[in-house]
Length: 114
Image (tube, rainbow, N blue to C red; front, side):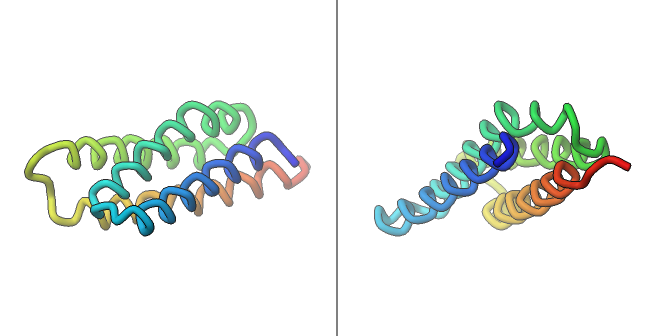
């Protein structure tokens, strides 16, 4: 198993744990989305993106960086007393887009260079 695969699997497992905890502990939706956004930012910027920068397609890395910047803005919106009503949905969509791009990055890593 590659390091990239391990980091993505760890991130996915942590998101599952956040989802389960939010259900069992009756979190507000804001708390769950904030935790998902914060964890995703730390996982990608601290672990996944440094690995990707060394080998994945530059377009994929650029798109991930763009999504992370947007996710950071959305996360910061949740800290405000009054935040956009669609910020919860937009965080979920951004995390889903990052999942898809992480899958693409893994495929690039597994495809032998020609």
